[in-house]
Length: 220
Ligand SMILES: NC(=O)C1=CN([C@@H]2O[C@H](COP(=O)(O)OP(=O)(O)OC[C@H]3O[C@@H](n4cnc5c(N)ncnc54)[C@H](OP(=O)(O)O)[C@@H]3O)[C@@H](O)[C@H]2O)C=CC1
Ligand SMILES: Nc1nc(O)c(N)c(N[C@@H]2O[C@H](COP(=O)(O)O)[C@@H](O)[C@H]2O)n1
Image 1 (cartoon, rainbow, N blue to C red):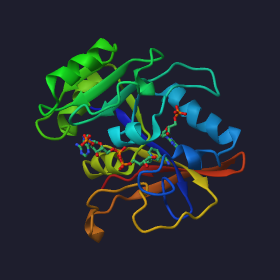
Image 2: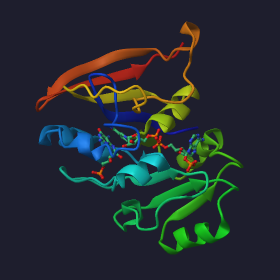
Image 3: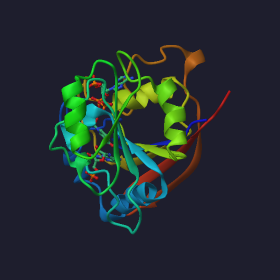
């Protein structure tokens, strides 16, 4: 068993997640209007868990809590192979439980420092976080629905394993350009027609000035 997984991200017309590699997406986020923020936080309020990769934590310092609408904060789940998460990161706030999922490569001293901050540390994997082992552990923890808010690499890791059930996009009417800027899905890519992830458009509508599209993964 695994959580039901929904990727939710803001993307530009040219599919970018941020202004340039290494840039915080919070700059682009300033283009989102209040209605788009409410849409995002409505989903956060409905799910049991929320995941971002640790590069996103290092780059954006997200809180991943529910504001803009009423609702319970989801459990924060951060895959991070060496537990290299800044100890002053917002995700260590007491607003919600936080699970740092790491590997045998993480220094014991760092694991202890993180646990002293009140976060849980799960060692799942030897070199990289083992998502195949992690999924049933999240489900057993009570995370029956998981929102994944990027970034590009984590989105790929979950998509390539067939773990993603939906993709919901907040479209920004801008072009960022740039050939190495993170897009919605990074990683090595499927590279072949027969391996592509197929989707069905379930809904499209406006929230404020933004087009929202909601896609369901089509299982072959
Ligand atoms: N527009 C939007 O909606 C959003 C935009 N973003 C943007 O995306 C960018 C970040 O994306 P990206 O750089 O791809 O980083 P990610 O946030 O996807 O994190 C990738 C990191 O996750 C860690 N990781 C843990 N387990 C694994 C695994 N099994 N396989 C691969 N990686 C693993 C690795 O770090 P380690 O080696 O330390 O384990 C890896 O470098 C930022 O610029 C951010 O602003 C982010 C979220 C939303
Ligand atoms: N830029 C952006 N657009 C979206 O649509 C997103 N889902 C995200 N996700 C992540 O959330 C962070 C902002 O969350 P907080 O306001 O800090 O709770 C953002 O930095 C991304 O990491 N981002």
